Image (cartoon, rainbow, N blue to C red; front, side, top):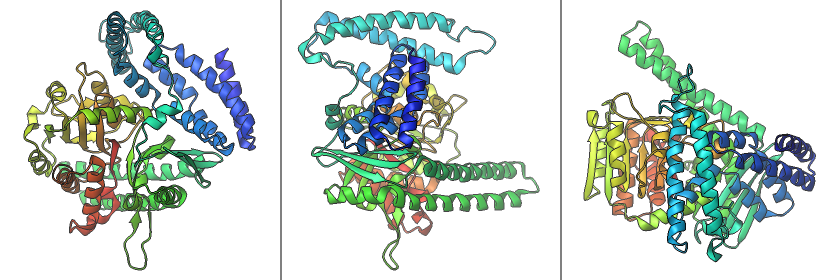
Length: 552
């Protein structure tokens, strides 16, 4: 039985892994992966697939580490790719399939089946998010069992038409798992992919480029060390957020302990900033120093990072070492401009969109709740770079208004509040006017497909993901990618309104006036804010390091 095979083989693989018996660990883990794949393919709902992914979590990282020790670097890269953002990669491949060489009937049957599956997926997401606990009936009026039965039937239809399409000479691998050539397709001549892994035995980076794969051992990057750092990171961050909320409440209610709340917030803010500096210093020593050295030695000034597990929560691009003598710290992004990607497959689709879209029609959301003092100045500066634009502000910036507008534009700028839902990332949100936020689920439910050059999410926590399945990379940034965005600028923590507005303004000047790529524009804006803005407090990585470029 696959259930028993998965658990038994996983335990055996872990035992061999612990003792450094790499070939034996690989053999056992591959049995576990085969069993996991069987269970995954037997499941038709995305919730069920996520559950199966969770049961096999971590195996791909362990296999890759063992394969690297055996010198099988291409296999290690491929294993990591297949374990990354699996649902996103499958959805992109399914929904954006190009069937030019299939006949008209096959194409029509395929498109009809995909459309029906997407409609059923919307219903099932409503199941996850809106089920009345007292009743098995959904807000749609249908039970989960009814929807799942329909999903099973339509998947049978899709499987039949896919089998027919695969009979064509150019479609033998249609909708199959990626191969190493698919990874290399995502590599550009001047921009390799860098996979990052932590395991109980240590970490590694695998640099995939056109001339091969480089293996960079990261011996101090153990699961234990990483988890300890991430735990301290989040403890300080959440303490800071709670102290800020308590101070804001005391100000609203004019309580007698207001000064105490202000002092507590200031202490928590300093503690969070200190942890940020300490963590990024550790990231240089444990992770980024050999990666930057290897990339620089190979002549690369840009690279795309694909961090696995809890590494995805940390600003790897802001890893630093002390400068010479009285010089300021030197950060990783000073040497190499780093973008991020959920996977090579997702990056390939992003590049296809970027090649097809001009990025000259702006839709901007401006301060829906009226609480951001610098948002209007920020949006005004952004709008000035586009001949065609529309902005919605205050009470006009409702969720429904925004969702209707998105497919008509190819650049999005959101200046608003945002929040990450750590346990249910489909509910991570940009906050619009009124009670309805714009969630990841809303983006996945969009019926009209968009092609978007860039989404700039100038809000808090927009680059974060769920903690339960970090390798599925579910969050606002990947939600916008699945909805059609080639690139997304987003944030890894709660950011400052004023410095964010200045950074955003500089980004668009770099991109639209300076003719830089979005990645170059972002790195340039970060360096400007840190070094040349004239504001000493903005030198701190809190103000600039939260921003990341996902995609292209």
